Image (cartoon, rainbow, N blue to C red):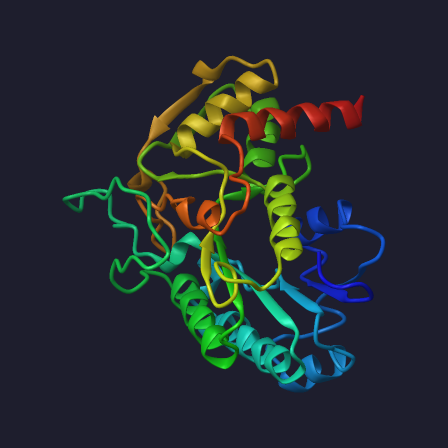
Length: 307
């Protein structure tokens, strides 16, 4: 963990990852300060300066704030770039000036992922951090990639952590797992795309990994690095949906496969966006568990809380 008396600023504290981080804070000797969008607008340099005016060497800025509406970004690119590109840049300038450490969260959408299922050949090898796949095919992905680059240019000690398909899984959550749980109770059958492959990531597991990263500190392998952190394994949304049904005691065969073309969206979805965990392990960090184990824990723990 960071030195005694340091402060960890968790930005995006009201989001699913921010909430997971705050639910399992580190040792008491370290102060954790949550900041929501009401406290700081990372797209505004003045707001960043005001909210982080007390930033000191040894502090950590853990940035979970982002414009995450993938479809909305296609028609609101100015705001998407302001938050996803300019925001990390503003934070990085603040951390470099103070000697604090910036950890900023990014996404699998920075890779093109061969979005069109009919494209050939289709990728089937997990992405390494330095892989180049061509420009992102969405405004969201392009803005996040620009934010990564600006953060590292502005503060070479910053760390970028890419993740994917993050969920909490509660029955009222708006993520994929929560949505599948609600739809299971509302519909006899459900069609889910079976031509998009990725790695579902339980927010609780990702939060634990990030706290381990904070504890390791900005050392060789973490400082100035781009790391990938997802639950292990790869799967399609269709298979995830079947697993959710099974976990809640429903018949998985009620879930039917379909294609991306059956559900056109404003922003194209990657056909393949699996992130390799090699960089995470090479940095001396504990690999996140298999996605099936994580999903089981998410649903089981939620049942326990409800019961």
